[in-house]
Length: 465
Image (cartoon, rainbow, N blue to C red; front, side, top):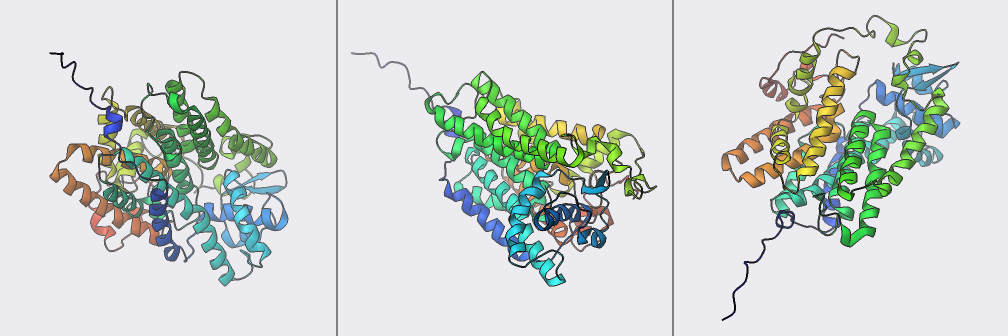
């Protein structure tokens, strides 16, 4: 009688964990979220940096220049977010996002709709710009999150619901209704991570360095190039978060392919080159305006006044606590991310886990960003007059993905209840922020918000302006 032979090899964890969906399904989930933003974004919500970017967009489309000297919005806005180069004023914001947004504004202008024509026209133009740029960015983050959730041990319909729940329970909602760069960067960074894990959203995920995608090199190269394009575009729009994640994904791909990820670098080249050229046209240097402080030191600049001058108000470790757990904190306004941090830590320490490389990339990016905003920025606050820690928004969807991974693997009913309660608290914060994204949490007494503010882990604020 023949020997029965060795027992069959169990399937790889990466195969067991996948709940694959078609390419269309994540797009539909994102479209549902974007459609919900349509009525919510109609009322204008503005701050200095919104006006700063709008001045550049309007000047490019109407006068063909990056200089904002003659923009009628300058007198209306009173924005402090300007630099002066020679006799000309410019926005201090990275120029790639305004230039891309000018492509949206140009047909509106040619059709007779302008920022400065009338109040009614301004409301309509702002509505279109927000939905086409920031709203689309937030929706793209929901799409990317749904793609990532293929690797979480939850049913597809539940994954759909969780992706939408995070959209409505995080700063993706708050900043999806006002013109800004952080929701756009969130969409680009999340999609870049999704494409690295699931090249072109199809087939087996490339989660583990040993998998190498040897059987699908053309798909791998295309996926790497698309990821590079998305990540580097995020870096030109939100320099700290996008830059950190661009570098982290590049290192991951270099380890996975055991060599230089040329396709990824080729995808990165276009946005980086565009930023360098545009910034040089403005300031004479490809370096961001924030790295050239003398450009802010002109007569009449807000940043040379008593209110705008930087001063240290306390130890930086306390500043870091506020960044994460204070009234405006990253964890405070989206508390379900506590599960995300726990999930990342757990997966990152499990050798052989197919999601371990992604966890290391996300936790590495998060640590670097927190360190940068705690010790690397000469500021007495991390949000200005805005709602929540918007500077960390680009990494929030990836953190939530690991929260779902942890919850799905644990299969604990009590943890599910706690997860749901924290999502609900996030919805309260997100809705209050959506109503007014440009006022700080600790200065607000909205109904509902007052109740959840009592749960703040570090309820002290060093904000003085």
